[in-house]
Length: 167
Image (tube, rainbow, N blue to C red; front, side, top):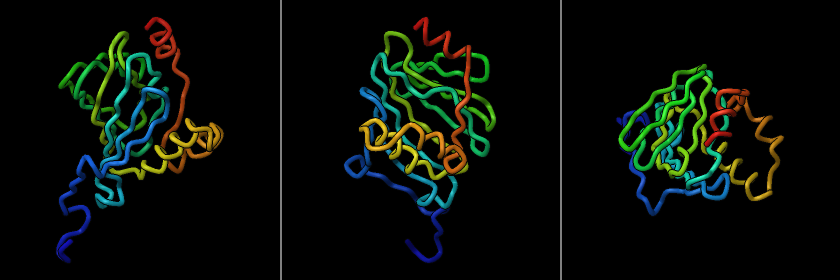
């Protein structure tokens, strides 16, 4: 990188062959693109590929970052506060800091989405932790203990529970 460019102003290129792909559950893939350390803290980005019937992400919120979802294919149910919306291919949603949200593929569908956080949050180690938990190499307790470090705060949502139960 030229001296005149900081990570925040340098282009970020991730070739498909170089992207790390993790799994936090059967049928759920997380492809890592760019984390805050490579973007000067500007953003974090990954791809969530969810097979039909996968649980997705439980209800949670972030205190510092807005989370963006762009659906590349399929349909994604997303909790936004007390409302569940279904995003279809090419739909976009921004969830502001502090708003409880969750996501999973819509009933009978799969979902493929680009996910971006801004500002960047140093999330890749969180996704690696989820992958280790799925493989039995780490405990769910470690996820709970990491809430502040990764700004990922789980909350109960009766709306989301009811929606998923009917899906």
